[in-house]
Image 1: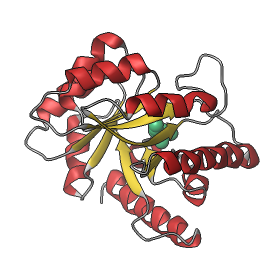
Image 2: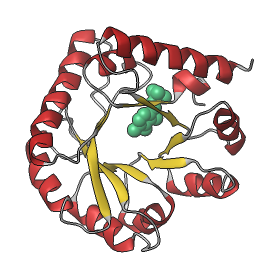
Image 3: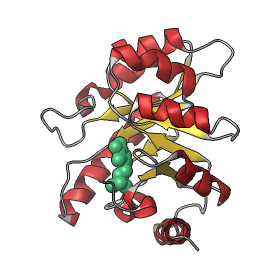
Length: 227
Ligand SMILES: *Cc1c(COP(=O)(O)O)cnc(C)c1O
């Protein structure tokens, strides 16, 4: 087996175990393979092992890979910061966007979504650790933004996404993830369409699953370190 195949199998086991340990449904957590900086051939290899959902951060790089892999029914997620002038490409080529943090971008994505495609699935990115210079809306502004996005015709409001402040302190990691879960559950009462809590990366996947993540975004632990 290649090392990516070994990693894929091991991540699958870890997700299964963490989900069981948390007393959650066996299918409660979806793996999003984060393939930024990886080649189209790496993605094709993982697809052949069964992976269907891939996340990309950089528009130009992603568009090249999406074109090279257009023979495969991959579900593409955009997870990087969105510049206004890239919104059209994202609206045209992706199935999901996790990094919407302002109304202006949401409006553009809705206006630019081609009419022959289903509504674009949207997660609102929340700056849960209140970090300066980080993307994401502040937790206290999330409700107002969700209310506005819910009105846009070509978007399907699905959930929240967070990248907590980098720390190796398990208590701090858990606090940030738990406050995301709390916010998610609060907003679900008003927006029952919310079914996706996108959090958990290579270094906090297990805690994120314990704290209610429904989608974990894994790059390094699958493909190895990025150069
Ligand atoms: C790169 C990236 C990931 C994956 O991070 P790893 O630590 O490599 O697992 C997840 N989410 C976002 C938004 C990223 O940019």
